[in-house]
Length: 200
Image 1 (cartoon, rainbow, N blue to C red):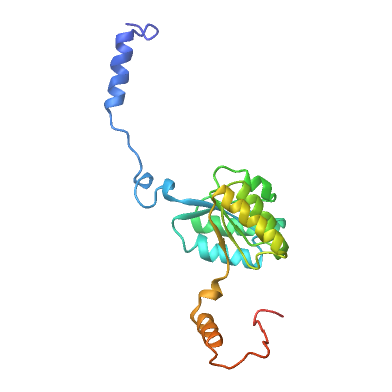
Image 2 (cartoon, rainbow, N blue to C red; image 1 turned 60 degrees about the vertical axis):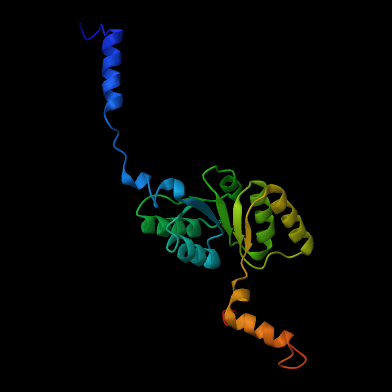
């Protein structure tokens, strides 16, 4: 039989032998660190709050999460975040993107972390829910209750997971203070002075 005249029987014999040879698959495809076991999220807003929270809370602390997009209107912020994330992953995993609409249109993004300036929280969360992306949204939630109600409705309609960043409310010192006030241990509250050590 010549090289140019491959018979049907010879072809079947060759392909059958190839099928019998076991395929070598890297162990990383299976088990706990398999790519299919990872959640892909996008960070929308990677300035002071978002950059720190997502980099430390997700990139470095959650091995089952990959931050695949750093979205910010400031080029220097998104590129620095993506570079820091990729250095940690030791691979080009995180892509800098300027337009949040392009982020929400991506099929490889499971959820988003929204850490933009306050007045953008609800509008971006609303569009994330329309895109059926699960989300974590920084505080404060918004600037108007009407916005919050619209967001609640679209989250329920699209059956997405929504988490709002009010971590301090679950810290022991805060829950204890609320307990003391509500049970009258400090008397009737006449005035409340608020102070934040991070405000300048």
